[in-house]
Structure formats: structure tokens, C-alpha cells
Image (cartoon, rainbow, N blue to C red):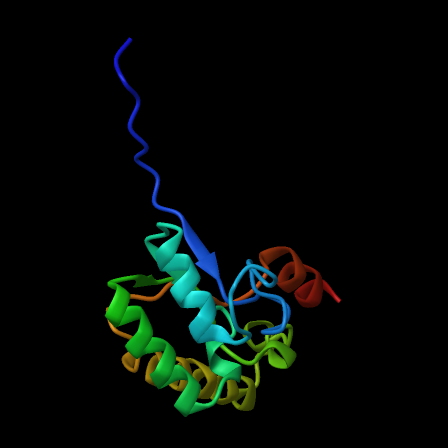
Length: 137
């Protein structure tokens, strides 16, 4: 057998449940998302998942985008809304207000994505199991 070369593209993350809990919380030289991006690049990751970008300030989003671009890293998945809103059953409610709220969150997510260097995002819109239970109740 010949030499095996890795073909998977791995990404670090800036925190899923909280920005205070990134993947390499204790390995970066400084706290904060920019140090996490630097460390991801130094470790050879090809991207960074910025799942909580919607909860971050525009200044932080812009700074993270600049740092990702500096290192040539791809952006990963992002929650479509701030963490406290993602479990709302927007898609299970038949009323127009729910649809407007949902579309407002998606439009805001698009604006965040436009601030990122490569413009390709995968959005986490909802947990199908949770949505199914919400629809059934």
C-alpha cells in the first residue's frame, strides 16, 4: 500500500454554546476569537466555524472576517439566529408573524454572511427532532 495523504478538511470553532468555550479555549495565547483564528491557522485547520456570529457585534464579525481572510481560512456553519432564539418554533406556527420573525432572522444572518471573506455559509436552522416535537404538541 502506498502512503496515505489526508483528504479531510478540518475546521476549528469559536464556540457552540458560548463564545467563552471555543475548541482550543486553553491553547490560544490570548482570549477572544482572533487568537482562536490565529491558533487554528497555526495548527493547519482549513477553516473556522463561527456558529455564534449572529450574537456577536458587527465590529467582532468584521475583525474575525479580516483575520480569516488574512490566513486564507474558510468560514463554516453559523446559527441563523442568536442562541436564545434558535429553539423558537417559527416554522411550525401557521401565523404570518412567525414567518416574518423567521425571515427577519434569516435576513440578518445573510448580512452577517456578507461580512465574511468567502461568503459561503452553512446555516443551522433548527433541530428536526425538536421541531417535530414542537409541531406535534
